[in-house]
Length: 249
Ligand code: PGA
Image (cartoon, rainbow, N blue to C red; front, side):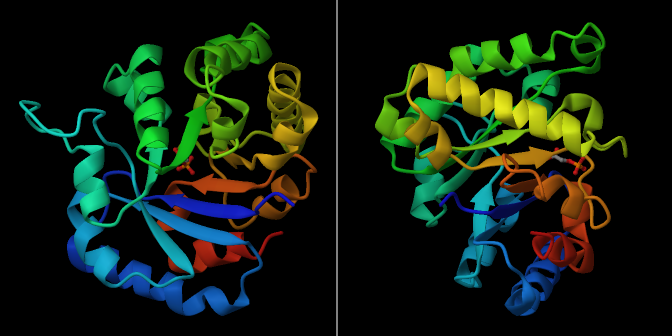
C-alpha cells in the first residue's frame, strides 16, 4: 500500500521561536491523525534545533540544498551538511526554486541524483504554469518534466521518490485545483510511470497534491484514488489547519 503523506512547506516564514512552537503544537496533536507519515520542511536556520526536538511522528525536512558536498559556493547549504544534522528529507524542484531562483531541469536532475546517491528521501515537485494550463498543454508539460527530471532513474530508485504535483496557478493563490483536475493529473503521472517502468512501480509511488490545499478542501482532494496526500504551504503554518488536513483521509 502506498503511504498517505501530509507534508508542510513552511517556505521563508517563521522566527525560531515560532517554528519551535508550531512544531510542538503539531507533534502534540498528531494522535488523532490518520495519515501514515507527517513531515515539515523548515527553513535551514531551524533544522538543527528542530532535529534536536524531533518526534518520531512528525519528521523534519529541508526545502533545498546544493548538490556539491563542500566548497566555494557562497550562500549555499550542501546535502552533506544536512546529513550531518540528521536531515534526510529534501524537497527538490519546487516551482518557486525553478521560477524565482532559475533552477533548470539540469540542476533539478543533478539534485535528484545526488540525493538518491546520498540515500536521502526526495520529495520531487512538478507543476505547470497558468498559461500552459490555459492552452490545454498541461499533460504534455508534466510528461516533459518527468522525462527531464526523474525518468533517467532506475526502477528501484524512482520508487524512493515521493512526487508532489503542484500546479503553479494554485500555489498561494487560493485557487485550488478541483478534485477532478487533481485526480486526472495524478492518474496521468501514474500512467506515465507505468509506461516508462511498470504498473507495480507506478502503484508504489505516493503522489501528493499541492496548491491552496486547506482544511476545507483536503477531504475532497484526498478522496481521489490517485491522490495520496498533500504538500501544504500556507495552511501548514497554522497547527490546527495542518492537523485537520492530516485527518482528511
Ligand atoms: P500553498 O503552497 O499551499 O500555500 O498554495 C503549496 C506549496 O507551494 O508547496
